[in-house]
Length: 90
Image 1: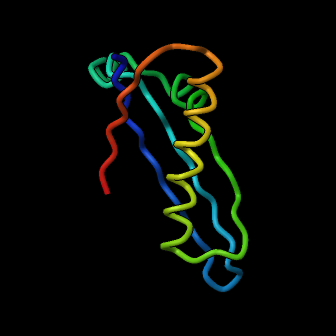
Image 2: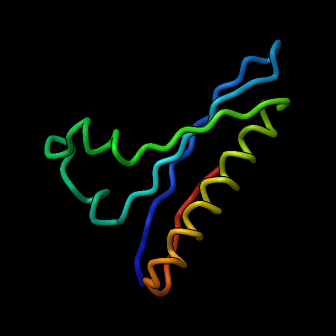
């Protein structure tokens, strides 16, 4: 089984009801890598952003998590890589 960690973030402009969600899904091996060996460019390649409209702060947080999981599942299905476990905490 492959273990991954999911990190999400969301920022909202409540007046415009527009927000940006982002996620980062990393393998367990990445989490165990010493931070001085991780480059900004590596993180930049893994970070995914999306704009959401007509949303609220709670809705945006949920939209971001669901979107990240959906994207991950689509990618996992196409790669045929077997079972996975994702850690995520609210």
